[in-house]
Image 1 (cartoon, rainbow, N blue to C red):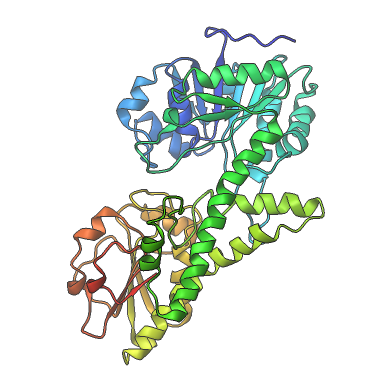
Image 2: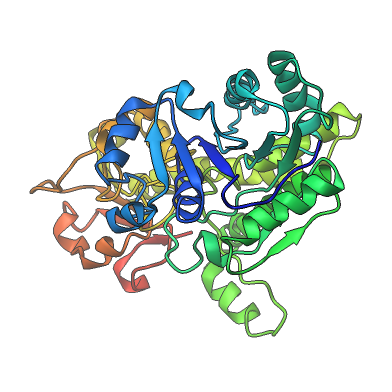
Length: 426
C-alpha cells in the first residue's frame, strides 16, 4: 500500500479539541480539509461560535481556518484518511498511567479505518505505548493489519499553555512513523504547517521517549531547587537570594522553587517510571524528584500555620485567601493544579479558605475539584494571604487592604512582590 502526499487527497480528523488539538486543527484547517472532533457537545458549540475557553486561539484565527469543520458526531470523521489523536493521558489516584481516553479514541478510530489510512498520536505516553497498546486496538476494531493496511505515526505535542510567543508553528516538531514511508509522510505533513521546522526521529519509540524525558528533566531540575528551598529554610536563608547569586555563573541553570502541576511536568515522569518498573528497573532519580515536588504543598501549609501560631492567632478562627488556582500564570488551565493540595490541607486544619482567580473558570474548578472560588474580593479581610500564582492582575492588588490587622501574614510563593510587603517567600 502506498501513502500519497497530495494536498487534495489529505483529509485530516483531529480527535480531541483541548489545548493541543484545537491549535493543531486550526493550522491544518488552513491548508487541508480538516474535521475537529470532540465528545464534548458544549465545547463544539462554543467553537462553532468562535469561542475558545482555553484562550489558545481567537475567533479570527478560527474563522481564518476555512477548511476546518467542528463536530461531536463520529460519522463526520468517516471520510478522513489521516487521524490525529490528541486526547489527555493523565495519571490515576495511584500515580499510574490512565490510558482510558487513548484507548477509547483508538477504538473509535479503529472502527473508521480504511486501507491506506494513517493514525498519528500526539498524546504523551511511555516508550512503546503506541505500538504495544494502541495499535492492537486499531487492528481489533478495524480488522486491518498494521503496516500493511494502515500505518501509524507519533508526533509529541509541545504546546505551552498561555504562551503567545512560542505557539504551535514556532516550536520544532518531532515526527516519526511506523515505517520509512510513513515517517516521511508524517514529517512532510507537519512541515507544511510548522514554520520552525521538524525533526524526524529514528522511530516511534524514540519520539515517545524524547517527549517523556523533556518533562522529566524539568521535573528533576525543579525538584532540586525545591529541595534546596527545604534546606535553606532550615538555615534561615532566602532561596531566591541564593539562586540569584549562583545565577551569576554563565552555565548555572536558572530554575526556581515552586508547586509543580499542570498536564506535563507533574504527570509525564510517572509514565516513564511505570515503563521502567514494568522492565524490572526502579528509576530512583525520577521517583525521588516526584516525591520532593509532590510534597511542596504540605511544606507551604506547614510554614503558614507555624507563622500564624507565632503571630498569636487561633487557627480555627483564621480566614485565608489563596490568590490563584491555575497551574501557571496568565492562563486558565487548572489541570493537575497543586494549589488544590494547599487548599485541602488548610481546610483539614479547620481554617476558612477562599480562592480568587480571575483566569480560572469557576464551573470548571467546581466540576474538577469540588471547590467554589470567589469571583470578587469584595470587602473581606484575611489573616493569611498566599500568592500561589503570578497572574499579572495580582500585582495591582493592595495587599495591606486585604489584611485583617498587623498580625496577618503574606506568603508569596512566586516572589512577585517586594520582599518588604511579604512575610514569607518560597
